[in-house]
Amino acid sequence: MCQVGEDYAEPASEEPPPRQPGREQKCVKCKEGLPVVVIRAGDAFCRDCFKAFYIHKFRAVLGKNRLIFPGEKVLLAWSGGPSSSSMVWQVLEGLSRESAKRLRFVPGIVCIDEGAACGLSPEARAKALAEMKLILQTVGFPWHVVALEEVFDLPPSVLRCFAQEPVGTEGAYKAAVDSFLQQQHVLGAEGAGDSPSLAQGEEQLSWPCTQDPQNPQSPDRPPTAAQTEALSRLFDSVKTLTAKEELLQALRTHLILHVARTHGYSKVMTGDSCTRLAIKLMTSLALGRGAFLAWDTGFSDERHGDVVVVRPMREHTLKEVAFYNHLFAVPSVFTPALDTKAPEKASIHRLMEAFMLRLQDQFPSTVSTVYRTSEKLVKAPRDGCAAGPPGPRCLLCMCALDIDTADSATAFGAQTPLHLSQTQPPTPPPTAPCCSAGMGRVQGCCGGARPCEREDPRARVIEQLCYGCRVNMKDLGLHRAADPGVPG
Image (cartoon, rainbow, N blue to C red; front, side, top):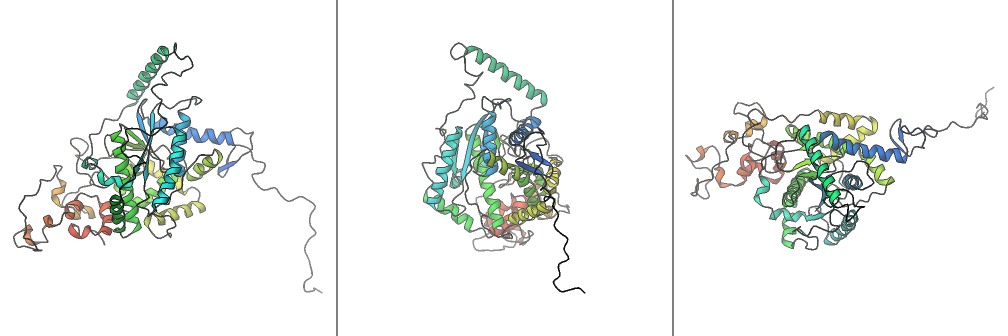
């Protein structure tokens, strides 16, 4: 009879336990080295092959688009994070003598100190700034450190879209390369007698290993207490974290563009990775910025006219960036952001990031699918806006306002006054007030339909914002002044 607790298990086999998968795997590139990185299932690379693969991705994106001409000044937007630090290191290696195909542009670095907006103490800001200065001095590029408080001193011209230069064709790019190489050859021949070991044309590509002396925003001169207090009040007045992040992004962009224009940079590089762009695409859809996805997530962003923003890290995932920085000791600086330690549902940005990363963990092709979708977006101008003077622009994101006619069925078209459809700038208001002081509605003035818009300057600001920025600015209370149609 069967007894309770009787062991009916089969005797243990004498065979050794099965080996874990991947122990005998070889590098998929060289077929010889032992893999140290597994990017995806079946894509295992050794150290040298992974470095070559990573560098090739960066160079291929720049070579395929051909937007950066030889000798052009390019500003690298560095935040101290992993992606932007990896981008700076790729440029540094591409400009070295040992590089097989050297990069031919002249780089510079800009860093925005956002400590006041994130609520950091002066001691914490000074410590983070000291760490950044050590890395910047090691890199050796000309650098510009700008405090976010400097946004109050920007000229009004930052809100104006400058005339856009025509995009160079493939023939123009080849002609520029040939001219640059010919110039390098002449300079190399002239300097051969004085310095035989000097690389051809290296005089033009040299840079000082200190901060640019012409930079007015010196890290040794911190912003005033009044500026810091004004910036803190501005961000404290914003109700939600979503609007704070959008406002910070707009102010940061204006500062970077101002530095680029002041110092003669025609291109700006950002470190947006593939994963970050996929999250940004979904976030922009949720924020009502679907009309501007091609500019927000594409390789190039020409909305500012004279300065073009490019994203050379858009083929690299965050996983690849983390592995590369760890294997090759790429330094970075951690600075707390607005959403640091924030819960998952604190903002649309955090919620969408958690959603995408969780989905990527279960379905590994999620990020690549969303990213490939963003590549298919085309920057098609509206009818009548392709030629002629630029139309009205949003004051925050600088995108062209998607103005519809009066009979439009879109929500933005219903909320936009008819006079905004004209491309001519609005005429200045008369000196005499339209309504009497203290009168909310005056019969015969403004039709008596609603309070006179000239009483509140916020109404004019709202009318110069795109739909996505209008929805965000509801947290500042601006939409109540002139835009009752925006959901509150």
